[in-house]
Length: 142
Image 1 (cartoon, rainbow, N blue to C red):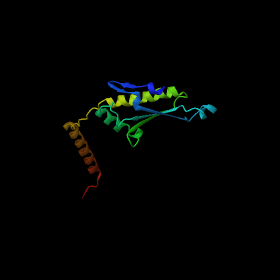
Image 2 (tube, helix red, strand yellow):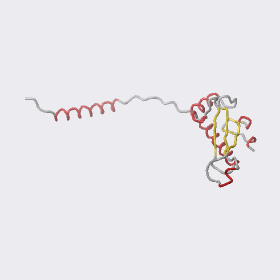
Image 3 (cartoon, helix red, strand yellow):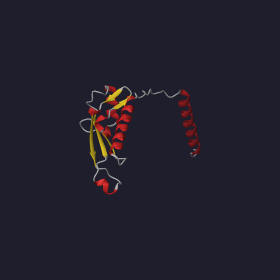
Image 4 (cartoon, rainbow, N blue to C red):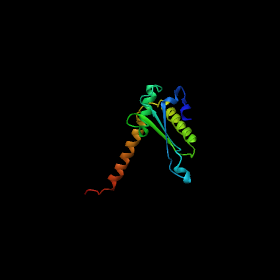
């Protein structure tokens, strides 16, 4: 069931053999049946050592998803949104594809801009006016 799924995002294909699944009991509603089924899906993907991720994508993924990483660099994704195990598997795969797609996008480099002279002049003029106003409020010397 879960072993046949692979994740395709752009030029990256993560085969099913790279994905490790674990199924545990889910919290939430479900009545007596919730104590018998393990519908929560936990997906483990070794992002740090995967040969299927380019180095730049791997670096961005590891930087962005620090909260989901284990000490050995495995990405943990869980889903217990649905009562059905198959739907939770699909949800985990969708989450993984979104994470990889976000890591594919190269962030724009911010170039710091210089403050225009007119803005600096306007700010200093306002400060001068305010200082003059306060100076006029003070007592007059004899």
